[in-house]
Image 1 (spheres, rainbow, N blue to C red):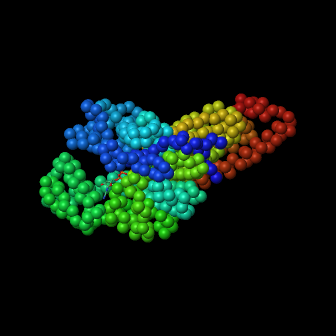
Image 2 (cartoon, rainbow, N blue to C red; image 1 turned 90 degrees about the vertical axis):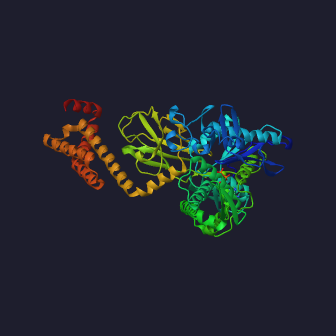
Image 3 (cartoon, helix red, strand yellow; image 1 turned 135 degrees about the vertical axis):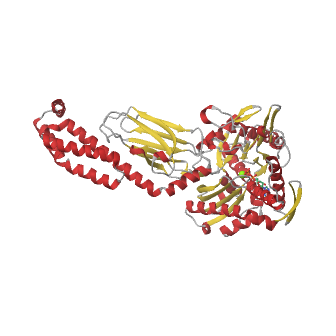
Amino acid sequence: MALLKILEPGQTIAPQQRRIALGIDLGTTNSLAATVRDGRAEVLQAPEGGVLLPSAVYYGADGLLTGRQALARLGDSPQNTLQSFKRMMGRGREDVAHSGYRLAKSEGGMLRFDTAAGEISPVQASAEILKALAAQGVETLGAELDGVVITVPAYFDDAQRQATKDAATLAGLKVLRLLNEPTAAAVAYGLDSGQEGVVAVYDLGGGTFDISILRLHRGVFEVMASGGDSALGGDDLDRAIVDWSVSELGLDEVSDTQYLLALAAARRVKESLSEQHQAGLEIFGQALSLSREQLEKLIQPLVKRSLRSCRRALRDAGVSSAQVEQVVLVGGSTRVPLVRAAVAEFFGREPLFSIDPDTVVAVGAAIQADVLVGNKPDQELLLLDVIPLSLGLETMGGLVERIISRNTTIPVAKSQEFTTYQDGQTAMAIHVLQGERELSADCRSLARFELRGIPPMVAGAARIQVTFQVDADGLLGVTAREQATGVQSSITIKPSYGLAEDEIASMLKASWEHAGKDLQARQLAEQRVSGQQLLQSLQNAIGADAGLLNADELQKLQAAMAELGNLLNVCEDSAALKGAIEALGRHSEAFAARRMDATISRALTGVSIDELDAGKVGES
Ligand code: ADP
Ligand code: MG
């Protein structure tokens, strides 16, 4: 089944019309681009040598620099040398606790760095990296680019994906598709044309760890689960070495600058210990020597932490480690022998490591870009991702009705019918929520909009279909449609800022911890809603047919209603409320029966019920 149409029917491409596309790995620490030429993926050389462009931009009063040139200014101009801005893409000020940078107090809550060249957003800084890589591509390939595929972490939410697209637009690039980093890595190994099965992608970079469980099914990748740790990476290994040095040298206090310089030295010794068994280390002006065994002891706890994330991701995906058929290693830190050994032991198989873990994501993106730009019209490749947290709507009583569950593969569209709560209700508020908790107050609010123009009907008669649609890039659109008249209203969700992976993790954790409490809260809220509904309908009935009750009966019924009304406000016990609601229901049964009889006899005598009702209301 061709799910992804690349060309219009009948359209073909002559060989000379071959289109130019890049795959771009826009990393936290390093970025790079790759392309497919003569059927082979090749990584572009960075202008400064090597293939990695450090994801750093210098915004000084004297101009703009990217990559290694920008890093060279870190010493004399740290506040103007931006790094790690990928972590702040699509995020608000309040999302970022400590960036180390001076932040501008801008409106709208979006985060901006305060630099000598003005206020700079993470999107702008990313755009500079993209521009530098695109320029490299144009120079290497001698032609303008037709499009790019940019990779993003599997856990990136709507806002972070949108911010990445915005950066590409700002750089003047056409985005063919955003692609999840682990999926790109699996494509680079050609796993998409291999055996069906489960693939784990273990990505340990500079500052983040990502684990993704993918499933290949009929040539299509589906992300079954993604997880990780946004504060675990090579930088932590460097810090472990520095901390060890501090205690080894018996230092009491080190300045920030000393610490920064020590980190650079630690990084060098760490990288050489991936090849050698012993290495010297010039740190804090003194000489130390570190063995691979010592290093392994220092970093063991960090490696174990990554394995815990792996275990959690497997559980989320509902598979055991034995069911994983291939393990792919991504990220510079997987060069550490202990990391490789630990991953091999955990999954019980040798991981794939033949493609440079620094470039494997860009290579996969380039292969995908080549297909998407139209160079391989006969190839069908649809890569599926999952949504990280459930999406739903707020319903009466502040409850959440889940429409799309977390870890559902995208693209996806799901609909559910809702109805009105009050008689004659002509508008409905739609509140879109993200999260796993039962109460809307505990979930994250993504958007609110209204459906207006619902024809007035009795409560519960209107049929409003709400459709949630998440496109292939992970962007959410919500549409509400009244079925009888076809009036509809919709919204595309671009939240002003997103969630970090650790926030997702903490929301999930909260949902597990509060599962019992949430269930009680939900039951209580449900009883409150049904109690209110009963009171409202009895009120309407009394308004219409009070004459069917004698004074004593009316007074008793109203007293019982007042009692329930009071109980609904104060009682926290859903079972007790349920009992009270049922009791009032029984109490009012005779009244309901009399109303039914009256309606029938009115109909038989041919008198309009409306006339009678109007008269009754007037009397009472
Ligand atoms: P990101 O995905 O965050 O941009 P990378 O995948 O480029 O990061 O990984 C950068 C990290 O890899 C750094 O911490 C670096 O020290 C580490 N690294 C690179 N080469 C080696 C090596 N040979 N041995 C150990 N760590 C390495
Ligand atoms: Mg990376």
